[in-house]
Length: 441
Ligand code: SF4
Image 1 (tube, rainbow, N blue to C red):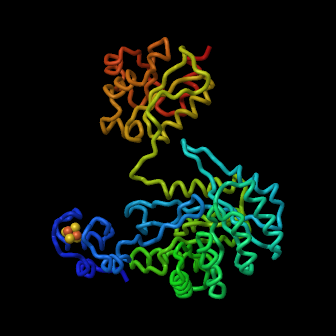
Image 2: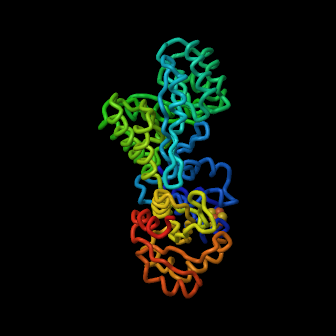
């Protein structure tokens, strides 16, 4: 159970010195209970009290690293409560009984550029389907040589010495060891501790999972990822939701770890929908079998939608952007630095096949009309940006294209900047026709 503010207060020094930020120990205790303060802020707290309060100051879901991929450390159930912090890790399942020379390049190719961001999968889960340790070892060496992302190793069926040899091969990459069960957890905890690798914990039912996680933690290893063994989508949804609620709302420590899901559907489209459910609620990592670009792009886009903080619009850098082989005669388009706006314009300028400069004015990542209504995309800011951007040294003309939605700015902008202002199309989709008519030839 989570400690209350009063429980915490009893452990504090009661000096009321205010050095922690809040003016009194009680106010600090309340902030700590609400997860809005860190115990480190009080320099007078005793070691004993620190130990007693560890559960109150620790994050509700532990941060665990698998290779370079950070999992967990979420603090809310719904994104609109605050934000989600660590996108669900997406792992592609490969196995030791398939043609890895063909599969690994496919996985490496799962990289997409969207609105200035790179979407890619995070890792590979190597299953042992052959049941043959030497074959698994050979497959692992192939994966390790051909793939640089995070790894999940299937070591649950190996004896101690074999598992140790397998893990040793890639221990420096901190793979996730799959998985400790009620039968083998002592062996796997020792293996995880020896190589400092994160350990997946798998058991049926939340009670069983919590019990096993406690045993692993009690055995001295807390870099855990919980992988509930569950059949059926609705049961999985219920378990993952309960785990998130119990860890965040109740601060129930035995379930306060990142979670791992495996899809079960065999049809690729159904599998991606299943994986989308896990991304939304509430897997920290999901393993999928699909690995074609057209299958993964919807999943990666879905993840980007859910894990993009709506309070921080994605932006492009406010500078002179060149599209194509520009020259001093190339047209100059002005827009805002909201990524979706900018890349809509860039795509259409590219489509016009007439090289051009695009100047995205810094409007804190808002679109043209929103920025105009907020006073961020007005004649003064555009004229100022024209001067500071350096565009005047790149073109020999003085003509810029203003978005049609803000045609009202054209007169004042021309006056302030000394540039000829041409009113362009209202929508980006009108740019190719506009450019061909005005700038072709
Ligand atoms: Fe109390 Fe410590 Fe804060 Fe001082 S720094 S007010 S002793 S909690």
